Image (cartoon, rainbow over all chains, first blue to last red; front, side, top):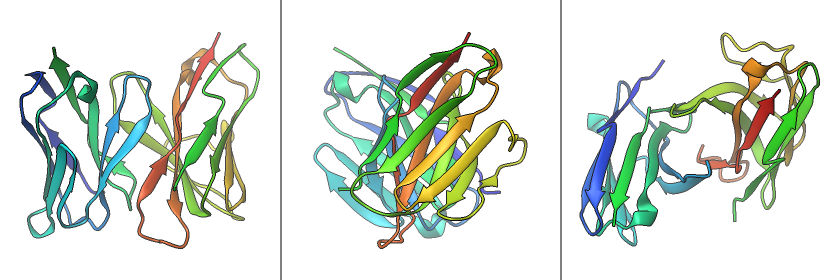
Amino acid sequence: GIQVEQSPPDLILQEGANSTLRCNFSDSVNNLQWFHQNPWGQLINLFYIPSGTKQNGRLSATTVATERYSLLYISSSQTTDSGVYFCADAGKSTFGDGTTLTVKP
Amino acid sequence: GAVVSQHPSRVICKSGTSVKIECRSLDFQATTMFWYRQFPKKSLMLMATSNEGSKATYEQGVEKDKFLINHASLTLSTLTVTSAHPEDSSFYICSASHRTANTGELFFGEGSRLTVL
């Protein structure tokens, strides 16, 4: 099956810093999604982004389907951004191992 | 829109008992619902895929008789952990995809934390 690789596995930032999270796929993906899992376990949809670029406030995402990767940008990070960020091939319900983000005040 | 509700959020039970977890799509009809298990500090592991009115499709290594899935309607799927044992303790999450949108985009429930004593 398809392999989903996320990097970096862990990231520690100072509040206000920017960051880029990456997701690589071993095969073509038609239903790429980014999620944030908060400390209580809830998975929050961030982007459904099979291709192109989307922005939502301080977050944006870009998927280059032909090169099998997607990037999640977080600008002006806040402590509430802490948690685990997952990318997934939603169509195959295959998830990466996640990036654990810690934003320090 | 696209809200999925999962209940209960936490359950503690004795070893040998059965526990039912419900997953409801509140404002849309779900073609397909998925059940995952998540161990601490790990990713989501797909357990099974359920389609309304048909038998669930289980992933390799998941015991069908241990984890019973019923998808009775387009808005409700249930996971029953039968004869639960301490090793079944985990965080269980469901997701659903929108029937009419049919994009494959997933919407998640809040998760259910099961502790078996």
